[in-house]
Length: 267
Image (cartoon, rainbow, N blue to C red):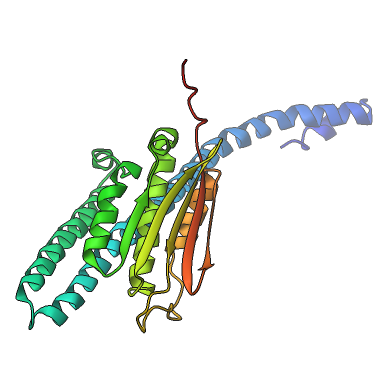
């Protein structure tokens, strides 16, 4: 349609013919642009929906791994302890059953949160994410559930300097570290969760000793998704996360998270 009028135009130079063709091409270009715009918008919408679904799946998998797996591992430890003491000391078996019930209810609550997230974004915001203010109860429950005695060193300024996102990430990292101790070093005698504030960051170290039992060494298992996911989360916040051997057969998980500068004391 752009070229068919050109033979009807006589006496024009080649540049004029090019101009006439370009003029006739304008409606075609406008029609193509008008047709391409809604298609591009639809493609962007589909990509946005796919990205949102992928982010939601990752969030669900992190919640299941961080919270449900932690509670279920506690149930397993309590069940093993109750099996050994049931015949000789029934009172301790009853205490273990109470802790199993508590951990089971906590796991069910975490699963309920996950299921509500599947039904839409409205109910997901009803419960705040756990943060470092809840670590005291977490460490106490960990100590009560197994043979490893955990200690928490949480200076007061840490709670104030960590943002909501960084505080939630720190809580998840502690859950992952304690869960790994329970899985891979159940005979460890001591575990330490220590926060150290600096000028612009907060350093978190989760350390456990080797222990004296036969299962103290980490068994060669297939790596999970907890540490890689938390490493990506820490990096997204501007921090780092590393893990490796520590001391004589122990293990250490180290995270550095960004923090607000310390408040100046008024004279």
